[in-house]
Length: 457
Image (cartoon, rainbow, N blue to C red; front, side, top):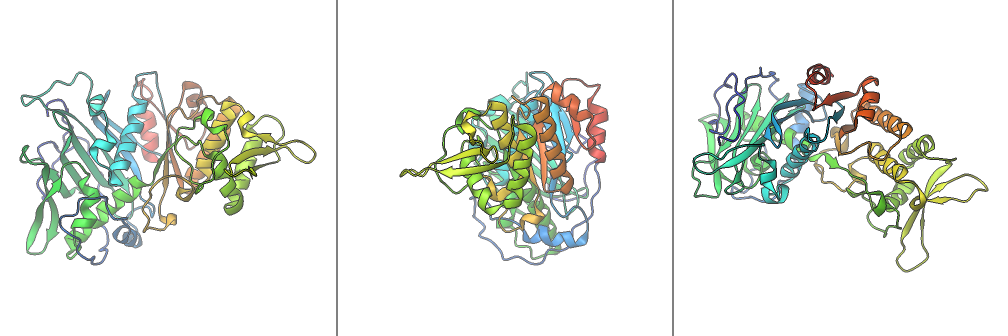
């Protein structure tokens, strides 16, 4: 597709055929270490095309080899051609803050990461990109066949070493995947290419070893092939086990993503009782606080301490009270201390509500968030990535400083990573905080130095 620019470089070693939509990267590829064999896996049904099974076996066993961090994490996000971005390679630190003027593409970066997460969880292209034309690069012209599209990708660090995922999507005239490539240690382990536009499938090829160098089979063109690899590859040869380890590492890292955008107006009303998993808009914050109050005492205490530093007036603690009516609605309150009336969260300012919701996300884990992590892998081997657009929206300087402290604390422990868009005020304060990587998408003078800093971390 002519609409998508070329980002070329040295061709990887022989493996599955490289689809026409991809050319080797110009930038030098960081070599990784081949993963340890993960052990045989039972063959799955060849025709499966539904959501992928939760991964874990191959990726988890690779940790013993010491090739990379135990918890798979996205170390780089690439927007080769996506919205206003062309050729953007963004290294991701444990805490990465994006800044820049309106229109610089901060939301597109977050949208690309969230899209990869949804595709890794088995979602279809139509569900992930309801308006795909909005993601086509600016001023991109259609080719002779009337096709336009976009490209995104990432590099995941983990037990299998650095693994690259690159994806080419046709947005017009029909939404479909036209090329995908999974690369590790300079070798293409899995790739797909659109061979026949009349068929709703792509031709996939993956490393096999043994008597046949590669195995080929059709894959659906509306789902991420890497997420389907655990359903289609048996793991009977060392080559297949390398493919499985790389694919599962990518899926584990991408599925461990929670996009959060608290809406204070929806958080003020009492919340109906539920399973206590925080939704994207945090409207059920009161119900989640009820759960953490009884099940996560340590984290709930940490949240109460954060509230003391960021909420107006005296804060003795946080509590959640169920109404006596039939609905059993839950109301969250700030405990003001002995002899003082509690303050319902609905009476707090918008900044205070957003702060409490974001602090809860940074202090908790996948079990308390409405997300779908890899169920077969222990939570201790997964790192949650929080995506937040307008992270500092409505917050004052004190609240911003406390949230940044919590993010750096969680990131330093390796449990929670943060990729967020912020205004210039919050970005300026973060530049003074050791451990935070700030990337200004609107000013080239900041990006090279800050991207190198993020890469070194």
